[in-house]
Length: 303
Image (cartoon, rainbow, N blue to C red; front, side, top):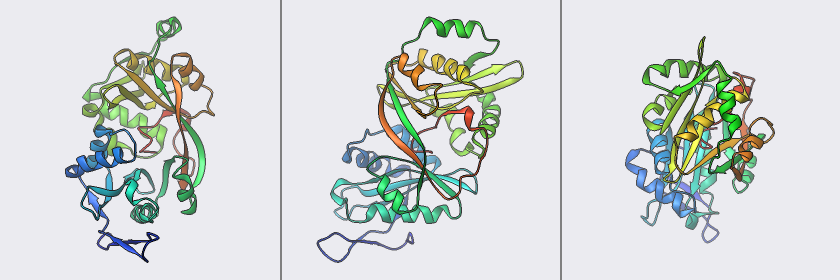
């Protein structure tokens, strides 16, 4: 669907109802994006929308009735051959009229030949399957007040590595560690994190920085821990403990429930499973990076 054309979609009342053209959104559309989230019963997540509008490519359709956006979707490129799709939303009053499919077809075309990944809710999964996406793994959000344990302190005392607050000077090392783990360049988002994240910590060994984690606030009373990159589960746990100690309110970890290292540990520290999604891919997803070192994503909007 070309960006300069209207979006004809079936309404069930007439043959077609043309929406305005799909257009690129920018930070000037932040208020409308937040309103679209609220319209669908999502949290407003103003900070996440600001991040995506500034660092990713966001596409939207203005509502024909003049009340904000009818729908939106975000594309984030991880180099030339990998991209992610997130925040696919259609206003409730425009549901079941083909707009979601039109937005998805548009953003898939924008991705070109890149493999595309996304986190799918149960509601969105049927559409994504119709468009050719295949499931690759599960994801569960663990949310709650983090409770530290004595064993956490003993683990830190018995390790030669140390966790400390990151500085701007650490960014090149963080990007290198992330590239080695993720296998694609996420710098367009991560370079924003020193100013965006509430807390940014690194795991430092005698050989240099071996891992890092960020905590950023999506809601006033809740912070997401992500991304989290570490050499092994104990190191990942140490980073979480350090970040949680400096945060108020709930924290959220988006974890693969089929990896045994963190879900049970998170539950034992006060976090409860709150939402489930499925990671899906369109196109070949070759082996890349060191997936075992990836413990949480940046966000479920950035698969």
